[in-house]
Length: 255
Image (cartoon, rainbow, N blue to C red; front, side, top):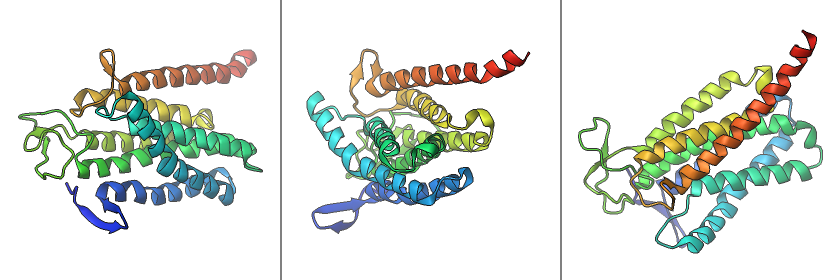
């Protein structure tokens, strides 16, 4: 774990946490261009969509997160991951509506966004692991538990073994990404990957939050992130079932 400052840019101290959130945009671009080429999307449309997403996740999302955190109480950090996803998807939706020539590729673009979103979250969580934030609850006797000892770490349980919840999300996110990459060429999933991606993230986040040990906003007996994830999963499941029913209608009519 490395929460220490690596270098400074004016008043901004850059550590591995910020570096991870910045550097992930380049693998995202490479993945987006590769998938876009495979789906026949012009490179300029993919690159402009990537730029819109980078601005949304890097500037708009932190500002909105700060506003929500202030509104709900400074002592309860708002969930940046969920906010980043919502802001990013909203920005892409607006871009596809306004960008000339982008609408015919909207379905394929959403497939690209879906897979890039999983990659984004997985790599960004490595930054969280380095900083000690988003950490797990104490896990004495757990063979793979980790211990944050650096005083600069954001972990509330310094010196105690905790669940490496950041790495849980990294591993689960990469597995989900790999699974969707295998499904991407199947006809049913074309234009529908976004629902599978958001649904997969919702399941991952819902489960991982049971092992989180940091202070988070609550909604009844669930964390705010779990409540949001549950809602997202229901929406995604309904949309996929709806698409599945529509896809099976021609076969039923032919029979």
